[in-house]
Length: 137
Image (tube, rainbow, N blue to C red; front, side, top):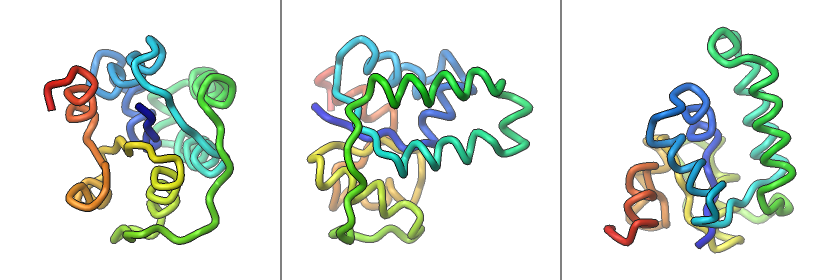
């Protein structure tokens, strides 16, 4: 199975190392699924990790390590240029939709805009994705 992790899931994994998003990240590291990333995803993650409210809670070195690990270990793919088949109420999320569609990957997100598209796209919350990996969903 392939998946694209929304930067909000990756950030949540750093903020709560024992939470569900961190369990999703560990599942990838354990080989439970193939993680896909792109330059746009890593750029958004880097930008978000630089926000002052996150900098107070996530050390710069830890943020840098995550981005380096993703760029080295995730399957990097080109950012698709075509429009998504379904658009998000937040246009900033559309690149994740296209990335998931082109790569035939699930999208794992905590974003209500993306989760609202779950009837039309393979979008899962971190808990739903873990259940899917466990064969429960």
